[in-house]
Length: 119
Image (cartoon, rainbow, N blue to C red; front, top):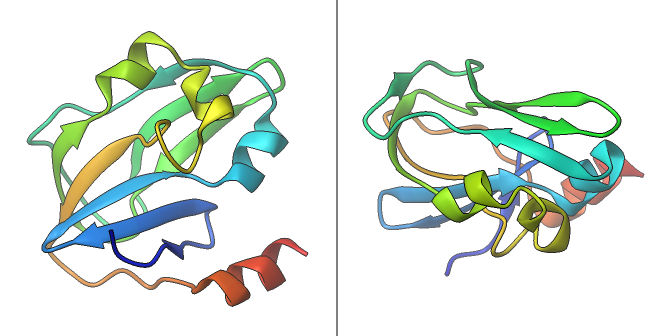
């Protein structure tokens, strides 16, 4: 897998070829608390940069999965939809949310810049 990059909306992204795997960061899941529900978009859905792709509901609040750039949904993590606690136990691994094909380049942060953002 490629190096992990981040968005200012607390999502991580790993790109392989033209497909990007996206999830929320460990920092984001800790802020949300116990995740109880995840709503993910349908495969084939197209989206614009900044558009909401889904919802992540916790015992504390509701957060949104925000598209970092325009593109198309090519896969969703059905396991997370069936067991939202995977977001808490493996936010940056098994708790990934969607795989996207971007039609434009997203603006991303490296790990050092993301750490600075969350400090």
